[in-house]
Image (cartoon, rainbow, N blue to C red; front, side, top):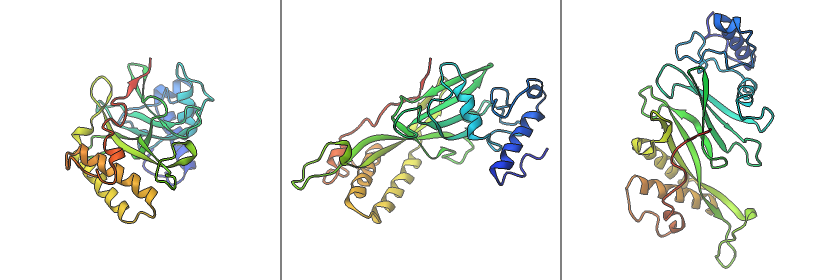
Length: 262
């Protein structure tokens, strides 16, 4: 079966995924359905590997919802990726979901199949969003990491007197801080300091956005994010002090490691 063909539409992808499941002797004898990722082959070198032949969102959400301690109908799946994060021959599943909360897509989790069990790793709920594309080969060396955009600060509207209006309805924009997570043997940990080139590219992107920002609200948040990256890269100790002092003093954007669920 040629798994590299016929992936132009979701319909073909569904058919391919089902075909790949049925192509595995182990899966076939287990009476596997399309919704059952427990029996699918998560191997990097599988004939129909999940990274290039992904299942449907329904299949992924059904798999997660039936794990111990989960509720099948709670929340929704927003996005997912299969990638070789551990570099041990087995793919990992990275997802963003809302966990049934009121905020949208603000939970990021990682699932690994190991020794017949599924390990779950997660950030504290409601703190971060999966970046775009979220799973990246940052250095172009075949090693994949997870990029998470954490909310590091909030820019509020200002009154006519110049003071900030600290209320939910007065939020002008959010300040995001991208963190890079990688497998370090015992879990997925913040390895951002190992990727300065990534933050240099982010800073260059922010500068381009600032040059075409349409209003002071967007510009304030872009400046704040740029200031934090400059501090992180140790480019300038007083970067942005004049017009972004509010954000420049925030030295701890958020949690520093994925926490493993019990």
